[in-house]
Amino acid sequence: MAPEHEAAELRRTRIGVLYALAAFFMWGLAVPLHFKLLSSMPPLQILAHRIVWASLFALGLIVAFRQGRKLAEVILSGWHLLLLGVSAGLIAINWLIYIWTVNSGHLVQTSLGYFINPLLNVVLGVLFLRERLRPAQVAACLLAGIGVLVLGISSGEMPWVALALACSFGFYSLVRKVVSVPPLVGFCIESLLLTPLALGYLAMTFADGSAAAFQGQVGLDLLLVLTGLSTAAPLIWFAAAAQRLKLSTIGLLQYLAPSGQLALGVLVYGEAFGWVDAVAFGLIWTALAVYTASALRSASNG
Image (cartoon, rainbow, N blue to C red):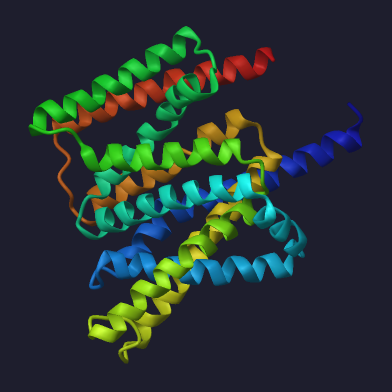
């Protein structure tokens, strides 16, 4: 490999890592802190505002990056639009659960959901895309399953919140893998499809006097407007990182986000984390280590 090409590749990788770190920092620390500041509002109203402002932000980026023609092509493509309608519903469910979980003091459960998610993606790939598992991946999924069972047995119920987060985002990722559209265009269409419902709900809250926004609290209103930025920015940064980095590298870095959520929940907000939680998370972390080592070995052999 020529020195110039090596230098360009190294520069590309460094930029990719910076994009990835920015995205996972947002998801792990900045986004949960952002929604914690909105905890005085009903989760459904936060979700509706998030959808509306994210749509406006995404449309602005579509104009800025001159992707209007591609947006129109996807909208006029019936099959892609139908699948994006499904993914829009899944991400709305995920967002609502996430907002409720963060604001009700369950950041540890949130982090558990996103630790489980990569392993669930492996299972979904087998079930729906006929992908084949290596023995190490089977072992990783079994270990993660045992970790979830430990939590369920110790608390008397399954960690439904974490599982709902993992499943909603896992199926969302599956649909988006099937729909071959650019990340920004896909995200914009998802937001636009949800916007009429969000606007209709917000109109009802203003009509019946239950609206919490735009009631003279400028700080709260600004935080709501910024949900568009905190929603779209990390998704765009993640897409930029994915274009520059190996999937194995992305796989390693993605665990920074739930690690940040876990640290925030335990160290900042004082959520409970006993020895049973430590055992369960230990099993899941071991599963992730086994899975990641297998992915790295496969990438190096490839």
